Image 1 (cartoon, helix red, strand yellow):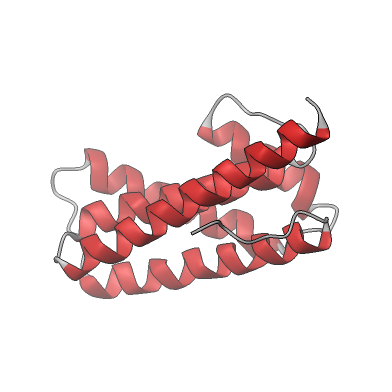
Image 2 (cartoon, helix red, strand yellow):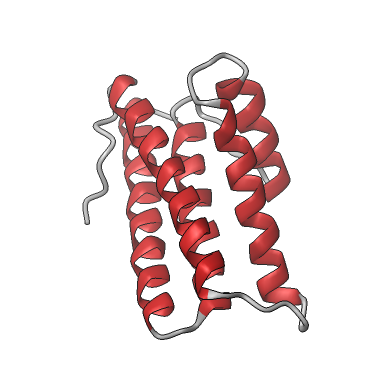
Length: 139
């Protein structure tokens, strides 16, 4: 992967993360809390993919993404330790929302997970800026 391709792919992930974030906000505003949790997770997922792409890493699974994030970026101190846990929790709630028919997503839960997703976003954008990737979605 060339540097230009890597940068383009990082930007694509940032743009997708922003799209998911906006969708989560809209869904929460409509009271569609399960759907909002899904989009919050995918916002964080695409942010993490952007981080991994800075090193040319492309995991094949969601668990692989979390594992690589921890091994390559959290353990080295380039990302805060809590980020991996917050993304894992977002993924768990996404799975509940998508597959557990008895799961009830509340407005308070969505608000708390939005804050977690925002912490992930802030940490990733700081990392990307420090790594020379600008760190801002195109919008």
